[in-house]
Length: 209
Image 1 (cartoon, rainbow, N blue to C red):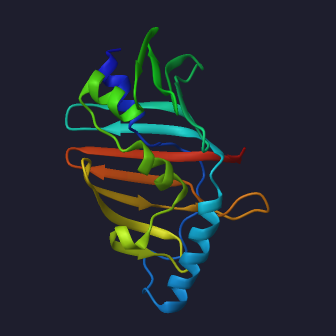
Image 2 (image 1 turned 45 degrees about the vertical axis):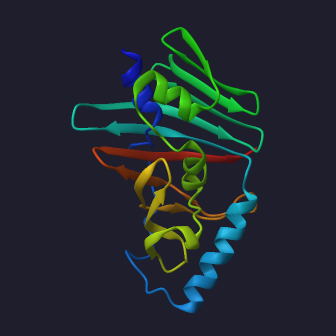
């Protein structure tokens, strides 16, 4: 498959048939009590900075739709993303740390300063990976987002965010896994929308590292 197609997959966020837990409500008024619950959850997410998420992803544009299994690992030191097909064959592997970024697609190896720069150079797609690492966990700063909706637990249901150099993104959540002793409540399904691009993800498993 062409590099651009699998680069597009990397921008994706997972579409799967895994079981998910629906939000308590489609929308709850932003009362002081609800905002307090949101802040408490955000504080927990801010401390959850060493994790692994696995599931399936889908990339949808007017020209194509692709899907793959994904394993996304993030820590303060490194982000690592692995895409495989249903047989477990590696399709794409990418990582970023303080020394730069690297990517292997269909046996070809590439290097760059960052994943965002590398993908833009290879495919023309632009993806804000630093923001995506936060969005995946359900975290966003209320001071930087608009059109916010929360469920009755104070978990994000959706928001819009303009990122300089990246444009406007819409992020929507359709379910959370309950909090455990090891980790806070975390999303099970996420949709990212950008002009002419929809990225969907379904996370089947979260792990703290």
